[in-house]
Length: 222
Image 1 (tube, rainbow, N blue to C red):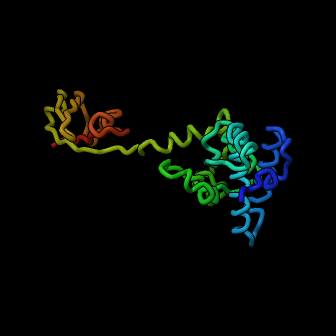
Image 2 (cartoon, rainbow, N blue to C red):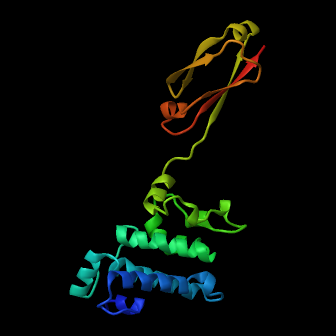
């Protein structure tokens, strides 16, 4: 049997686009697990339900098909449409302003987040939240599309090498080739270099490994 998405959001079929957004944001705040202690499982199910309803009614094309055929052939998720995604970004600011956690969203949108290397847990607030990041601190607002893209970028990791040179070489300076993954990099040791000096090859790992990161050469003098 087709679901009554209008009934789930508590609106009529004549509801405007703005009324649909308002109803969704109001219910999302109501069904947040933090506001339903002891009933978190029930709240999660209700949250999933209103998100499914909004992913259809908040998308003009999906809503048109739903109104015509009484069902949505492809519910999808709220991240796939600019209108529903923007409303969800506004909802995140509502959560942040109310001091509500974000980690439960990983379970709500598990399928949609697969392959994105992204976790809403990152944005938990308070002492237990990594970094205590608040959505309201993002300049220009939140853009989940950008955050998803950033999350998929490989983590930056620098690599260290050590080189031992003579006192005379340290005095006059020299150049040597460093080979990594069959690719050569020319390392310039400046004249007058001191023991323990570090020479940083900026973004060198992009050349040798195809990923972001510097190569750091630590100089030893014998």
